[in-house]
Length: 140
Image (tube, rainbow, N blue to C red):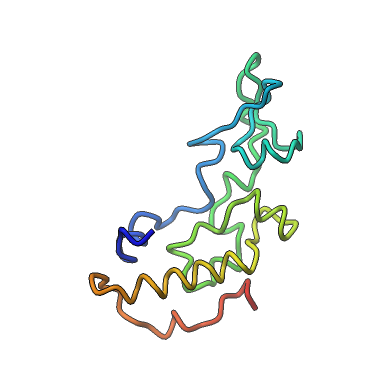
């Protein structure tokens, strides 16, 4: 986790929201159902099936949350750490908050703690800003 400076992470994740579920990774169940990731497959919720090994992918069934950008996560856009955070895992978000678009408070607290810890490393060039001290909109 601490192998890269916060600046490097910010550069790599800029304009990246969500995860690779459905586009960079998939999960296939024993029944042949294709889900965006193993967490959705574990839910056994057919709303998130994006294909079947015998029929191929149903691109139209890819959940909007997995295609949606920052605009779908208004609280995350206002967060001072939004450029290093991907808005949380949509499957975890759904289970914890009932919304694919809103991460649980614990995730936000973890990202904030991680960002503060890594910014204290000597090789980091991230300047300290007032923005970092602002409360996360999701955390309240």
